[in-house]
Length: 257
Image (cartoon, rainbow, N blue to C red; front, side):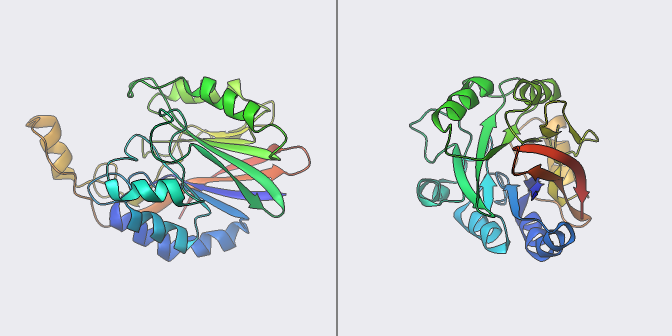
């Protein structure tokens, strides 16, 4: 049995520090064989930086996924091209830095990890299901099971995606909204799923950002730097158990620490 922890969006230095200080205990609690974490908001202000990516990896992340803010910090561009643990959404144009998927070794098995962006209420991209179909065809025979982080706004699009690939991808977890959903489940075909894994960061503000920054954004409407909130920090995600013989998920459970 492959035991997999997937952690929602890490927000700012507060979230990174909390991940550093708590992920080992969580790995021990679930006897996790691998950890996937969404790091696209791990840099203060927005995006992911080289420093925040390296801190997450050094703390225990085996794979770091991205999202619509992946390219905000330019110092991460070279890391996206070079690091074997960092992916950005696969449905960006091929000219963008980095790759949209990787294959990692887990207990001697090959885990294909894919990252895609949704299209509903997001920047226009190639449809995520089309992109993933191409990846699965291209990598057929090179992996034992697949996992996908779909970074999307619309809950309907995330569930459509999971049901479309039900039985072909072992686990699909949503990210982006920073709010953990209550629908962790195993779909009929054997795909583990949650609409949104939640976030790792301060829950004292609004989605990890200082309350006053978001109030300004909604009321005054002028640009403002999003400062990370502090205090009330917790880490949310999802735990999957995957049968390595069948490549199917047998258990999906929400995680909070």
